Amino acid sequence: MKIMYYVLIAGALGAMARYGTRLFITDRYNILLVNIIGSFLLVIVFDYFGEKNILSSEACGAVGTGFIGAFTTFSAFSYENVSLFLSGYRTEALVYSVTCLLGGLLAAAAGMSLCHLLLRGRKEAE
Image (cartoon, rainbow, N blue to C red; front, side, top):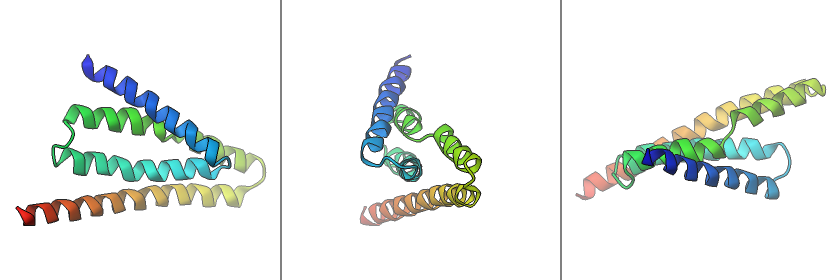
């Protein structure tokens, strides 16, 4: 039951962080940026903090599911794409979709590569 409170608190903080980004980046690229950052952070949380036991598995779950889950958003991404498409911006909708997908995958791959480098460096130092 305790983990549910952690997810709740982390989720509230993630939602506030996402809202905060809209205050600084007001156009549709806000969702793109948030989702790419979230893809990078999720890998860091699970592959580095989890692997190094910096965070417990419960804390990784709370941060990953709660904070990052609330910070990123597939529903807003979908809304942005449908809005662009229905407004006649079909090419922009396609480019936006591909950019979000590839950007998220590249960010996750970059996070994973960084984690592997950090973990390998740590193991060599020991």
